[in-house]
Image (cartoon, rainbow, N blue to C red; front, side):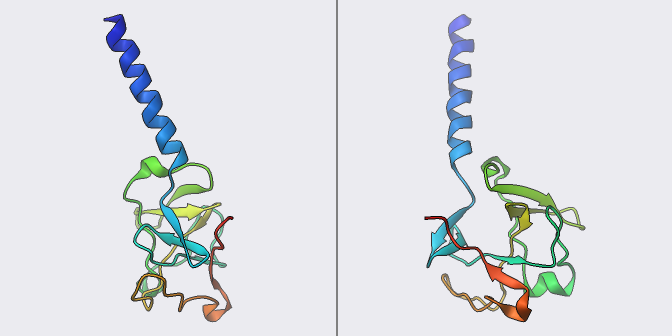
Length: 123
């Protein structure tokens, strides 16, 4: 019995350690992108922990939806949108895609309207 509890404890610790080092993004062309290589953006009109891009805005700038909440940690957190959906945030700022970015690596949204920007990847 003690061996089973000890084994379960080590397994849980290993799982937790792996999740703490993971994140939902990769670096692509010097900026943060989804694992599929799609460029991510922040909206300067968002408040920390709160998305202000809803309705038609979210159609043009789809939220980066949370598929695996276990990846949260470090610079990456999860915000709850007005519709109850979960969205990734980087340093508290919600993350979005740009609908006009059709291929991995596209950055057509950079600087749009003076309020949409990519996030430079840390070196």
